[in-house]
Amino acid sequence: MVYPVGVEETNPVVVFAAHTDVVFPDEEPLPLTEEDGVIRCPGVGDDTACVVALLTAARYVAEQKIRPQGAGLLFVCNSGEEGLGNLKGTRQICKDYEGRIQAFISFDCKLDEFVHRAVGSQRYRLRVRTKGGHSYYAFGEKNAIAELAGIIGRLYGIEVPQGGKTTFNVGTISGGTSVNTIAQEAEALYEFRSDCREDLEIMEKAFRKVMEEAAQREGVQVEYEVVGIRPCAGGGDPERQKMLEHRALWAVYRTLGYFPKPRKASTDCNIPMSLGIPSVCVGSFMGGGAHTRQEYLRADSLKSGLGIALDLALGYCRDDDGEEVWSLLRTEDEGASEAEA
Image (tube, rainbow, N blue to C red; front, side, top):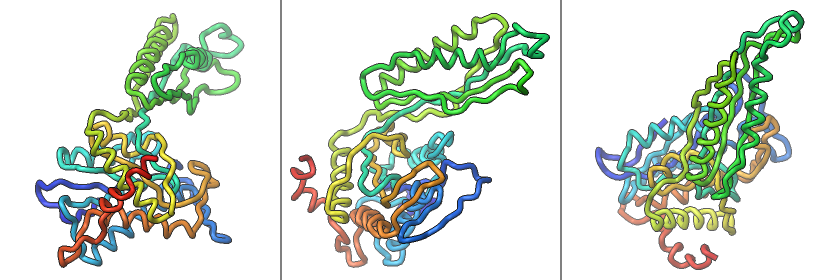
């Protein structure tokens, strides 16, 4: 869903986005309960609460007939942020409005968190095939599961570079037919992450070396395919990025009375950041258990999330008389030194 406000054919735009997908398969039920002011449901915080805040802010702007100043606004509910979605929704927005996006604000974390740096990642599906056979009569034939396990062991032996924080993980593994069958095929999903672009390149070279060596083994067919690439931040104007960060920090401060904790993460902001577009990610709720079936949020925190979303959106708007609805730059100038401290 894309709801434009004041967006003309060529004018610059500011994007406000929240993703609609969750980490759980669509066919799984997502039961919701509410008790003692706590709402429990898989995906209730990440990112449903943020979608609600975004849509409510968009409705307020529409109902009050408030118009943006200097740039059009795009309220976007996108998909593809979780799992193997590869940020496809944000990629499409950045493609459709190429050269026009002045700032990108994502709603995708807790109220006391603030993402201002991108963690890039590369994800692969590994596949191993062998002849296989009966576990007794064909004993000695190469086993695809054992071969894949050996590859995984070598991948876990890669020494991570130290330019930034770099991690790796094998998230799923599958294969084989039965307990008395030498496996003919096995697969795994592997990823590495880093907040340093150069470290991602080092990890890619090390990964490819392991896979190329594995492919040399006789009687073993080794394949891999890219299933997702999330880039780190690219070039861009550091001052414009800093201005957007201050804008977001003060929006949170005005609502909560304190500044959120800055952190690095992999979010929808990865794509605009890689294109040099100033980008930040802010939150809309307080809770826990993200990416588990025990996820929950505090119902009384939702009002604060809406306040932050409105503060940020109205900072780019004027009312029908041409008066500023909310001036964030005013408080940024007054409190810049405190924000930096």
